[in-house]
Image (cartoon, rainbow, N blue to C red; front, side):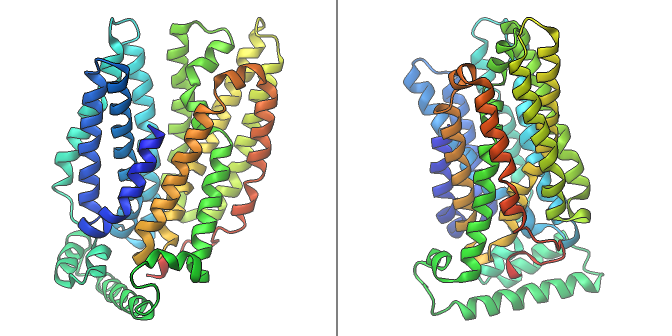
Length: 394
């Protein structure tokens, strides 16, 4: 599935430029539904793998959602609204664990577990037809009338500030396109290498994603049930206990949803790092205690709750920052690179540093996580202190 996610991210840029943000998300729903159907009805392992790959394409295509939300949301609430994307990712993981717990004793229950996403993708597919296209995308394509019509749906046009914001957005995009008219007109993504402002954007966003992934969060979520078995929970109880980690991640995103714009991006990075660093320390120490002792479970679970809880708000930044810092004309390409890199890192951590590595080198593995977590201070220094900047120079 992570490889399918990379493929979906690669397709995201041309689809975004060709058909727009909203239609790309509609395409992701179709891929979701097809992939879930293949997984649920799989008659061979090859059919199952094909379904998972197509499902991954849908996940990759939906990575444009943060950019879509940031382009449609009022300036003062942009970070809060984009953080909702991570909240819903965490909610989906919790629902996945819950569905697994429901069908754990059902014969052939794995088909229901893998096919359950078909329900949600179908609901989203029909819901998207009631949403407008991004006004910034429409302006980027020269559709001023359509963009203004969408803006009227999204804003109270009796407020002069909303009219002024639309005019400023038009002027900003016009100036931006005028300045780029003779630079890399055919291969605009080359601006990531030739323009310092664009180069800084892609470097800073992707460093943050790489180091965030190196803390191992996706590997932990992927192998949560197996890790619970390692501290002597039964196979059935391990499925239920997975809800502890998933629920902590879900609850951890709520403060960012409420206060991302009020506190600023840098605050959330600085405030969350010490918390999930301590959580990783507890998890590592928990593996040093003999598993026969109750203290081993207690210390380990406290570590998982702290780690996932504090990482919840930080993980919102991995979507908020990339959705804001890229210029409008490069936003699709920037989100492709950031999301694709996230899936590549996730794939590496899940399948190359698998649960055997956790079992054989338990404390050593978590020590590496502590170091990776500690190195996150590098991109933190690059985060803007000001939440009052327009996205991508808009």
